[in-house]
Length: 180
Image (tube, rainbow, N blue to C red; front, side, top):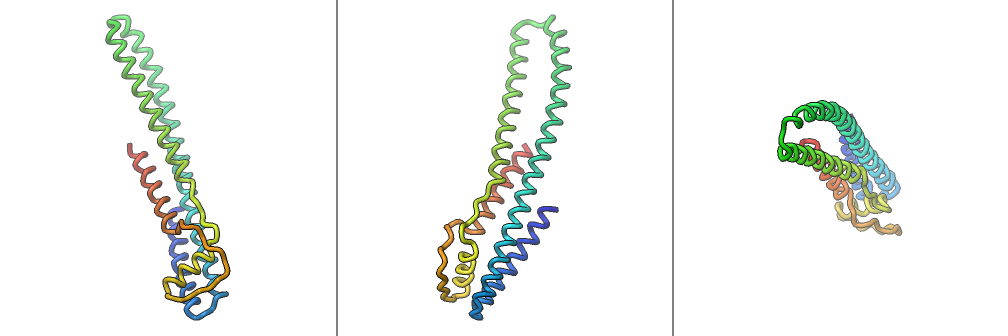
């Protein structure tokens, strides 16, 4: 549901960007500014929806992880009981190998959990440009080949497409982690 809302906001952003360009071509700076503000708002809403979807996915992963840990605890309890019976009849070297294997499985679980937590933290962090309206208006004017002299500071180098690309890359990394 949140992904659909994000896509809707992305489409609305494109519509508003086209309106900015048309208004600039007509020389209507006030209308261009209004449409640029709308485009920025839709972009922000899209990012908010994506961010919330990532958080919901993170919560779902944590719930699944918790259920898996509870199941593992029950299995460990059973295993310890069985190991107690088996170790009475097993040589010390075999017991040592079995314990090493169990320890390795715990370490693997800890590494996977840490990687997933780090990916979730990165997925929910997105940088925003400082003066988005001026930057968008200038970008649309450049695309339309119009000289636009606004006495506004310029926005930083990070563009909308770069921020969206970073968000998509983080989402893909998170999906890969869930598969493994």
